Image (tube, rainbow over all chains, first blue to last red):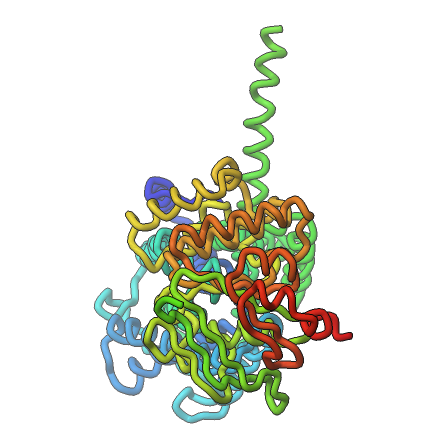
Length: 329
Length: 237
């Protein structure tokens, strides 16, 4: 598979960074902030699922932990918002390492792994909906304090650039993984775990490391969410919606590719907006659309949009010399 | 026999309560080719899995190059130079041949990797021709060669081949055993765990016959070939 170069990453980030200079529309910026947030959360999933082949249905566990840790530290302990953000990422990584240690040690694979991660996220959701520290059923409202020191801004543009910067960091992390020995081992685990063991890969440790990195990236999305919407409750933080978004974006965009989650998030979010335009705000309809898109992708383009683009390019490259012959002949 | 590389004493192993292997004693000397013969279900795979650390021994000891390895993780055992080439087509299908080979050598430095790759390509020229091709597109025989090549990438002292001739055409089997002798000539000891008795006994110096989870015969390959018990043990007659 062709890897994204630093130049690719730089161009994509630069183009996206210019958007707020072209439009001041809050609708556009809000749409993009949410899409990039989903891309970031999906990138987290992609590290474990796309490169490591371990399909988690419970990335909400990491997203929610990032959001809650950051919100609780700010509102209850007066911790600075930026420090709380960093600790939220650390908290998510810790939860990832714990769940990873438990599941991989017991040898859970495939659908069993998926179901157990789903169960962990659900348990956390139920706990958060009753525990006083998470605000139980009411949730947590982060106090309005529109200063950059408090990680709050008057306009949406700074939020947009921050989520873009986080996404850019995730691109670099993924590229680093792709080029490292660790990445080769991770792909080996995805391709054939028995063979990976035979070549001396410590598969447990590789999977655990992937899950920790994956959880940290997704937790960054959660902590950002808390800062952007200034509100967290158990359904938002640990609800299945975010677990679905996390896996939908990379699967639609192209699993195990650098830009897959971004492509997927943009397409899925645009589809969601279009449905809303056509049908009004019928509850649950976006999920129906997601389900349909997922079935179509898995059936007809298992390598996602990135795979489709690569195929088209190949076909174009093959067709071009023929066209030239025809033109000359 | 020269210096002992692998020494197994009183080994027992199994799955849960059922014991598959018992009273296993086996030795492989440095640079030697040794065969373990046995029919289906005799315990060959269990023996392989136990030596390579995937399965824990319930009793007994395994020493490799002077170290007790029966409690070590598979990755550690590979790092020591004991490489197991698993049964039938255990390659990474969506990776290229070159990527497959490199995975065998990631524990070593880049310079080692390139030298090892050149060595493997010299032994398997067909792999060199198709280095950028996906491993899944290779024939069964080529995949087997790739798996062995990947094992060689790790600079093994001892290479355990699990049923290397399984599913290969007679001509490819000939070729495979010739390659095994070439690999051995370069100083690598080999443990062949096989059903293919005739050819195995031609290349191996010594052989063990596994039946019902324990060795019923062992000795020089020539003696084993002549032993009337072989047919009985092997064919279960």
